[in-house]
Length: 429
Image 1 (spheres, rainbow, N blue to C red):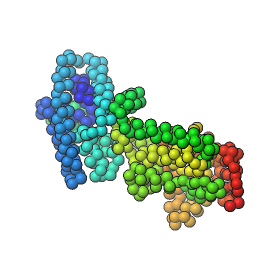
Image 2: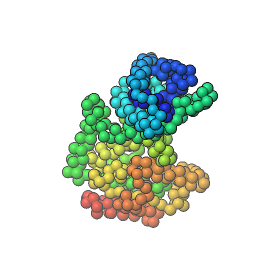
Image 3: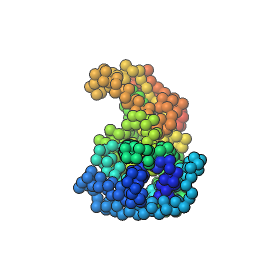
Image 4: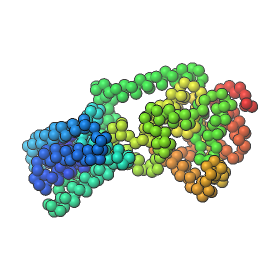
């Protein structure tokens, strides 16, 4: 990573956000950049101590040692790059700038799997995230923007110029994450295999176990009925009745309850976060910008989704069942023996249902229906990259208010039976 910093300094087009403050110290006060980096790391550790107080772990003092090593390597790499001729040709400066992003991305690629001790910058961001309960990805963006603004302001005041900030700062913010994503996609498995990454090995074992269970499930003629539904359409009640009549298990909150134990988060947090992708575009931005975020720093909603996916596949492999929500139709797509239903209802019926169930006013019920359904749309677009109400993703679409409850359940079971070829023992239980 430090060779990348050295190339960005050599290009004189601006350094990456995280290096902007140390380089500003160099530009303004003439402090050698390696020493400035060490000072900056010490300040960041002090910030962690102030924020976390008793929760600060003594082992994180080692971030200062890491900062000292990082600072000395910064000095070394700047010295090595100093032997390259100073260039005024804009093309060569751009080449140096692009080389810096490549080296930074490759450095992060090698640094990520170690997961021993974070750099002080990451530690400070995590401390802010822990104290404020703001998502780490958002904290990272705010942190980078703040560092750039501080650097730019100081340089404009003291040296009447941009100093450490320039087009290279923007390019680094954009390209490092993208390049890291490409490198990880191409070489990530080889790196993890070489390093004996335990999580990857664990994931592979889970996949092999699921594959064996899936083969056994197919041999036993297991099937899954998935239900996606509009809020207030009665989809959950319909799903429970279908499972009851077919004598198979029903899953929705059971999955969530199991997930809370595995991911080590409270059920209250799960309820609040389970579909809270309120703005899909913003989350695409976060994903793109923070590609070097570690597994522990993934957005809560990502953790929930991936845990749900694993449990849903596990259940579908082992038994016949009804699964309501959680994008089960997408998770089990093309591999499992599924019948996928979308249940809707007229708005006035949904409003009436929500009023009866939750004791809301008509206006409140209308607003909640729109809010929840928008969240489900965004959730589907984010994870499945498809429209939630695209009926080509389903085997059947039914409006629950077109027929009475019993007739709706019966029609779904009979239609599912025609596709899945399971035996219907009784529809009159």
